[in-house]
Structure formats: C-alpha cells, structure tokens
Figure 1 (tube, rainbow, N blue to C red):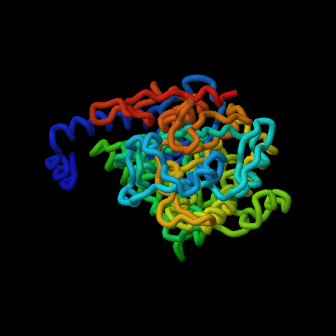
Figure 2: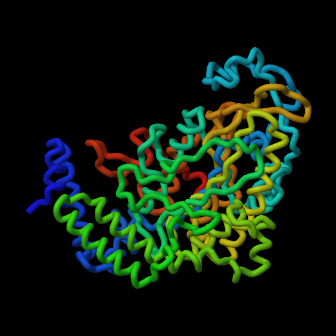
Figure 3: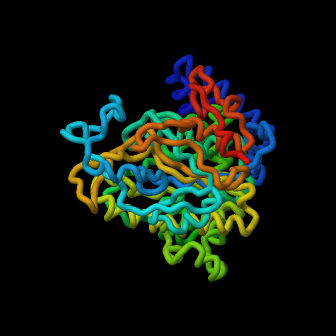
Length: 491
C-alpha cells in the first residue's frame, strides 16, 4: 500500500510525467538487476561504479583509458602564445582591414570603438623540436615538449561571450542543462576504481587578473544523465571533499549503521515511486563512505620524490595551485579515474595583457611540462589523453589604449589554439592555419564539436552512436550538426 506522501506525490504528476517515470523506473530496476543491486547489499551498490558503463564496452579498441583536460578559463591569447604572426610588426597601430573582419560579430566591449588598431605581440617566438612549432618566450617549458604535442591552431566556435562559450565546449551546447564531457565518459564507460569518482574536478588558484569569470557547477554537471555521473570537485583547504570527515562523536561503525538504515529507507522509496535517481543517491552515499579511506591516501603527496616534485615546479607544494592540481591529476590517473578536469581562471586580458599574461603562463607552463613528462616516465601517457585550451581566442586588434609595451585584446571566436598529447595523438604535429592577422582560418578548420568527437574517438567511442533519449530526441555530446574526428593529429 502506498504511503500518504507517495499518494499525494502521484496525484500531482501529469500523465506524461507518470509514463516517463514508469519507463525510467523500469530501466532503473533493470540496471539494478544487472548490477546485482540488493536492497541490503552495500557492496553490490558499488557495482554502479565498478567499470560498468552504459555502453558495456567501447565501440572499438580505445587508445585512451582516461582524459585529463586542462582548461584555461577566460581564453588565452593565441597570438601571444602559439600562433606566431611576425608580419604584424609592420602593422602596428594600423586599422584592421575591413576585408579581414568581414562583418564578423564584435562584443559590446569593442563594438563602440572608432578604430581597431593592430597590436602585434611584444613577445619573441622561436621554433622548437623536430616539428619546428613556434612557441612564445612566455612558455619555455612547453617549448621543450613540442614533439609530444599536437597543436591545433584552427579551433573555432560560434560563441563570443564567456559563459555560453565555456558551457558550449564543456557540454556541447550554449544553453545550460546538458551533461558535461566528463559526465558522458562516466556514464558511457563507468569507472576503473570503485573507491573514487569517475569524474573529478580541480579548480586552481591563479596570479593574473583577479576579477576572473565565475565558474558554475553546471560545467561539470550531469544534466539529464543520472546524478552519480556529475563531476566531484575537490577542495584545496580542509576536507578535500566537503563533509568527507565524520562529525565529532561519529565513528566508522556508526556511519556504516546509519548508511545501512538510510539505504533501506531509500530502497523502500524506490519500490514505491520507481525514481532511478534514488539508486543514484544510494550509490553516492556508498561512494562517499569508501572515499573516506581512499581520498586521504590520494591527497597525501609526502611520499612523492623530490625529483618528481621538482618536475612540476615550486608551486606544487602549495595546495590549490595549478601545479599541485597537475600532480593530483597524475595520481588520479594512476588510480583509474576516467576524467580529471582542471580549471585555471584569469586568462581574460581585455587590458594590461603584458602585465597579467606572463603570470598566467608562469602558473601553468612548468606544471604542464611536469605532467606530460611524469605521465610519460611512468608509461601512463600511452593511454592518457591530455587536452589543453580555452573557450575561444583573442583579437589581433587592441581593446582600449595601445602602446608599444602594453595592450588589451577582446574575445575572438573564429580561431584559437588548443593542444593534445598522449593516447594515440601524433606528437610533433601542427594542424591548421590562420591568416596573417590570426583572425580567420585558412586551412583545416576544427570546430569544438570536432574536438569533442576526437576525444570520444580516442576513448573508443563513436560520437554518432553515443546518445541518450531525452525529451524525444537522441541527445549527443556533439549535437545534431556534423562533427568529424581530427584524423590529421592521430598517430
């Protein structure tokens, strides 16, 4: 017999909601049966995390077992880092030609300017490695590993403002509410470690522009996928995960007894309502219990050798820095975490670029080198895909006052640089080309849909075949428009 609250809940449901929940409920029961989920079997609940994704197995042999995504929030200037444009020196303070801009969108921050004066990069560039890739003097450590990297200088997007642009590259849509890349990977492939989340998020401190764009949890959210696939943020102070420690007076046995009782109540609710999110809640409680033992060991770096710590640079000893988070990403990779997302904010240099950009590059340069080198020395780079980039690029023209030694750059979605390494990526590759103004792509354009399709491909997933039925549509990370794998950067 239904309880009174349940009867009231059912009365409030529409006919469409009822049949939708019935379908999901049956799916949840089937999942429970496949996973061996018993009403009082705590260890069986962990089956939701133990390498058992919705796909069952990849579509084809995977090159990558895991992804580490290094996201430079705010949009790094490709002109001052990787997209060398020496011809622009003779264009200093001249107006951007109309035929180059060709009526493209401008933000409200520069649309009112009477001029669009060219601001050449003040930084020296050199070619490195067998590939001859150009790298700015701001990134001397990255320059040492160019033959391990595939640079894509022709990435582009339609989004021109930060929040929709970051939402777009992370979830495949400018409109909030879709699952993030890490959630898709967790859902499709499951986890290789039942004691840690499949998807971990690390937010880093930064030393550039302080008033950086906010990051919202939807960027690592699960959208319409079960909530146990959302990213789990780790904290840099206190408990690595909120509420990980037991409160005073509660020991492990009491905690276990409480969770068993809570599981019984949740299971009863599931039998009455059939909401599959209840099983997600049960599995999340169990995961939290197991993490009480696994996370302290994960975050304790005291046994790391001095040579390893030195690889990442002096900031690695400071919790919350990008360097420390890169070391954490390697430790998470060793433990089988499917996706680690590191955010580094402060790349939005509308003004004072030459004051802020060197600090931003210093934050990440040696740490990226340390991560790639460390993964490589341990044999992990062979099956770990590392991705670096932001949400769009920056303009060649100056926003605000232009001088010989300082300038600002506005948002520019039509071309920017990303790089990838490891897991079947052809190191020493420079893919795509922009015009002399780094304003338009002239060879091999790569939409952010293509970038995500390539990430999925290296994980053994055909993006066209990986979808979830939601609101009557087959929803995909890459959306409904054509997306292609970037075969030119694959080994």
